Every structure is written in structure tokens, then in C-alpha cells.
Image (cartoon, rainbow, N blue to C red; front, side, top):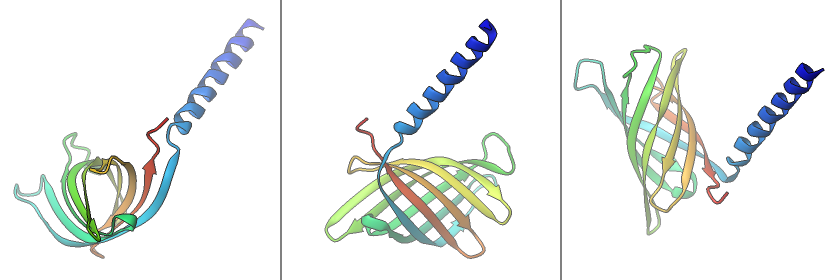
Length: 147
């Protein structure tokens, strides 16, 4: 009986921890961001790739992105990226630093990142890069950091 009670208590603790983590990720707004790849190249013979893209980023307006993709853990099917973005919507200009991980899935790459912006927002961006179609498309969610 003690083992069952301990197991139940542990299970409930894990459930509570999971709910708390989800509560911390409440969002304010969600939007689509769609980009065309303008250029891609490597300076080092295929270890690091650089990509630039431009397009529309929901409420941020016109956006320009630059990425550096690396595979520092030698995974072969995934790695990490860093980058920079700047956007303009009317007179408002917002910049963002971009960082996250990518995973190759068939012919596309999935990106998962957290991107802080100069207007104080933190965005969770999940996207798909298709180098053949020359597109990068994201679902972006503004993280509610007030909790």
C-alpha cells in the first residue's frame, strides 16, 4: 500500500509540474510569418551555412532575416542556428535576435526557436525551411512573460 501511495504522489507531482510548465507558456498573440529565401551560401566548404530571407511577419510588417546554421554536435540531421531580424511596419522598426535548433525531416528542415525582440516581446517560432521551394514559413507565438 505504501508503494502505491508513493507512486500516486509521485505521479501527481509530475502532473502538477507539467501543468505549471504549460501555464508559463500562455500566449498573447499568434501569427504566420512567410519568407522567400534570397540567398544561401557557405564560406567554409559545407560546415556552416548562411541564409538570408525577406517577407512578411504578421504585425511586425516587412521583415529581413539572416541565419547561420551549424552542426556543432555532428548530428548530421540537425543542429543549431543563430541570426538577426529587422522589421518595419510604417514608422515602427523592431529588431530581434534569433536562436534555436533545427532538425532535417525528409526534404525540409524544421526550426524551433525563442526570439527576443527590441520591443520587449519574446516570440516562440516554429517553422519549416524548404530550400528547393526557397521558402521559410513560421507559426509565431508571443510568450506571455508577465507570469
